[in-house]
Length: 134
Image (cartoon, rainbow, N blue to C red):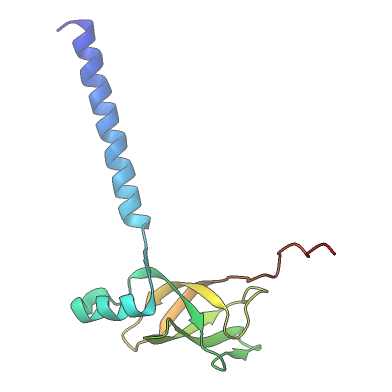
């Protein structure tokens, strides 16, 4: 076997190994990004979809936010207009979290129908836009 062939075989092995490691890493850490309606449809098709890591993008239902300061528990409901899910989050909410704000909830849907969030991200509307010049 000449040097060029050895180099090509070695390069193919290295590229194949790196590709395999990248694919397996993405598979292990990848998460679904769904709306509440898409989540409902996913559960209807695959009832074993509970306790899977995912992100849900939706709006907080106005009047559904309840905070327990002693246990640092935040509970609220999210909706996309069609479906809604209750969410429980243990920790401090973001500063921009308010009633009816758009959020991305990262967590797992349990069999009781509640999303147990590990992270809550709140979208801030026009809060940081430049003030119009007079």
